[in-house]
Image (cartoon, rainbow, N blue to C red; front, side, top):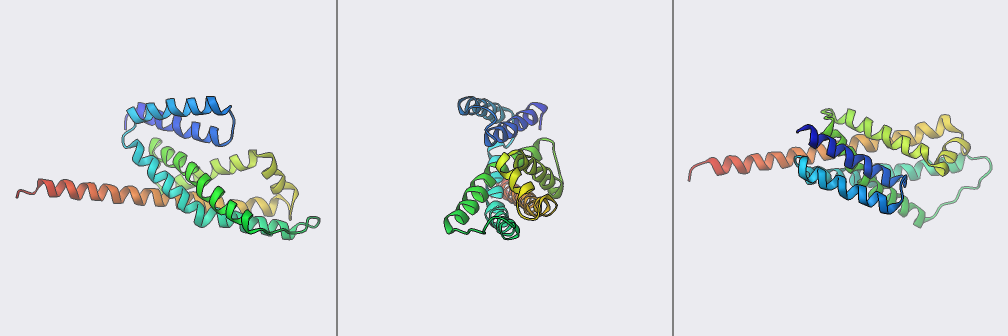
Length: 200
């Protein structure tokens, strides 16, 4: 991949993360995203395939690992908190699994897969760790979540590693799924090409 393609892919990843964090007003964020996507579409080889695999990997890992893991960690924090009475709701659980796990997981998966391809990071574990570190930084930058990590339950020495376990599991699984899908797609494309070369 040419340097323009790598830079454009990284730009899309950064703009996706900036929009998730609401660091710019929505109109500017959407404009930046459209410009970055247009450049990546032009210069990044297999851009849409990378995006699609990132969404699927991130959403699947989010629904299976991150969403349920976060819900479990939140329950443990609530139970261990000496002041607050633990609360549980089915609606809240579904929101965490589908909204945070599926939707947010898919969006973060796009950024992670673009970073993995652009740098490039050949190890799925290394790519997953990079994605997890980005996500942990995002979580700790949110004031409400930061207070849950540091002020509730048994405190940060228990809460941060507990949430971190699921974040790192999500990151590695998301990148593993994305890479598996990419290998399958390349294998199918190679098989079709070889078939076309065989004389009738």
